[in-house]
Image (cartoon, rainbow, N blue to C red; front, side, top):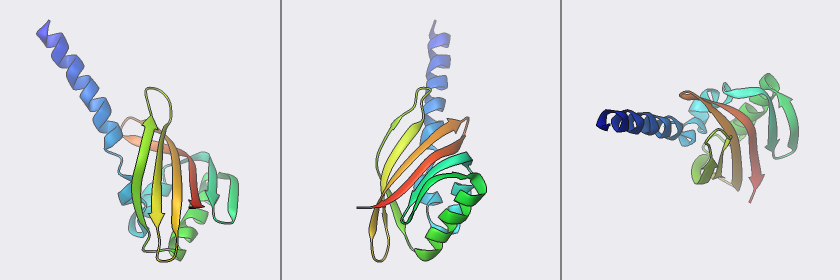
Length: 125
């Protein structure tokens, strides 16, 4: 009986650690933006200043890279997250640049220890 409880506890903790292991604050810095964009789904709902549509993976990667080139010292901070249990996970955050602060919205699926970004929005606050 105790063995089953221990196995269940290890399984559940590994599920939570896999989700917590994704640190978008590290990815959403200029030096690691490639780590973030390489995990875009085949099509992604993308919203950036002056950009709003569904894009293919490669085109979305270019647009996001261009945005972060314009704001190379942007600082991301997570404000709220939720979802999971078989549903996509969302994360609401703040992206502070030298001139503006943006509200971010990120929707992604976790796949084992990786993730696939479905939607990414960067909107003025």
